Image (cartoon, rainbow, N blue to C red; front, top):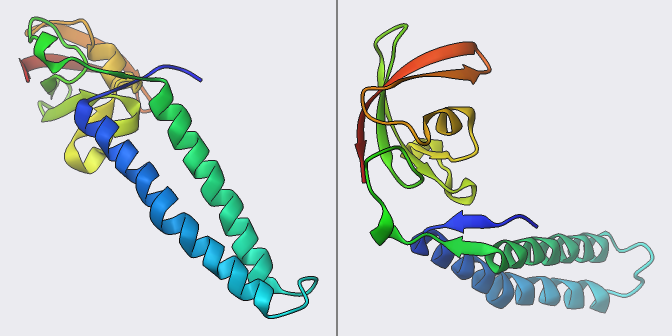
Length: 156
């Protein structure tokens, strides 16, 4: 499993999710299995089959989350700077073609959320911006073709 970079907040969210799945969802599914089992013949018991399948999916999800946090590296936010674009920076960019200005925070893949304007560091736009400075124009190969962006501002 690859190393995943996370903020302290992102790591805490994943740990909270694991605790919820283990302490709330797991007992709920166990109860559902027990109730279905109490109804008799398991060979034709759709409720039992559904509960067992839900249990398998839940255990897989818990396992994936545990792997993710086990391989997580917490980003030290005190070492961030705005000399050049790096993960956890907020970057204001201007599309050279239409002068549209956008602002994104570059985050770890596990914390990406477009509604919050947080883009994963593995996306083409983030990859194209990382390591560049204010005033530079970068060309980024996007699904829509080559795009040019000017880096207008870098902040924390």
